[in-house]
Length: 188
Image (spheres, rainbow, N blue to C red):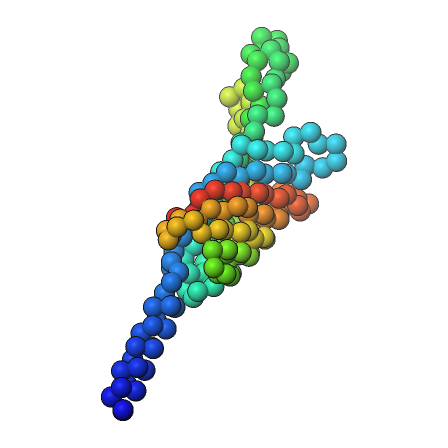
């Protein structure tokens, strides 16, 4: 009876270890990102739909991980007509871009195939633009506070239905309250 009890305890402990490892320790996300910038009242260029987001997360426990996030968005703000700057100046686009690099904790609940998560990421954003061959950029501290929802599609794949973030930046003396939306695939 004692040997049977020890074997049963051993099998139970091994089963608990196997259940504890039913999640991937690391995951990689790649997807589309929409950026809405806070550019003041009367602004007509707040919507920046052309972007992407990449992030990688390593989970120390079943629910707690650390995330590294890279995002990039670009927008053509308009066209400078010929001769607008000086006589003989060419026509050209005014292009703007924003990219950010952020790091921080992520908490993820694993409820069957549904996996909601929350995060607080800190880093910097580089905002730049160019027109007629002249470019300029500025960097500022930024934060992404938010979360999203992943739905498991297979053992090593999930679909990120949505990730929403309040994207706080500080260019100049004011804090901009931007937001992002991202969706794509997760590889584990």
